[in-house]
Length: 141
Image (cartoon, rainbow, N blue to C red; front, side, top):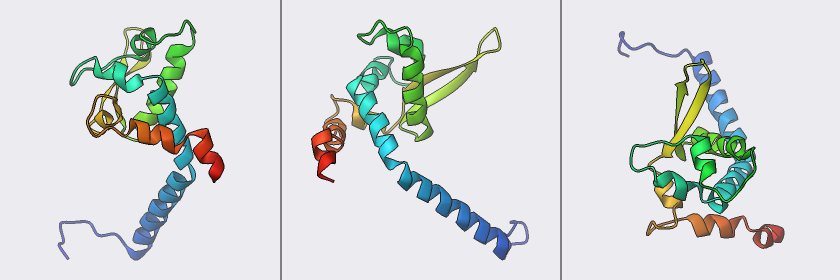
């Protein structure tokens, strides 16, 4: 073993394995949640809106909500919740900025995987996602 590289003790290795197993179990349990969040993002065309910002550019939830066909004053809050969940799963990019008042705000951008959820991409999975979690299909299970 290389003396310069810290080595985990067997107990630490077991803990690391437990943590990894716990995280994987949580992912499997919450799998439908992510699918439903992805469905909402697709139905609202959030990927289509974000892609209009251009490569490397980000948009705030307020900017995104302003492009949706809604007058709901809570729309930016809901958009932020959906996109925050997608960002936590690396499906969209997210940057956090501190405003002059000290409040934090998020901006969202396309991640490498995001293009596969736009309608215009040749290998889009958008329709597959929507079909896979459609009520009729889910009721079969």
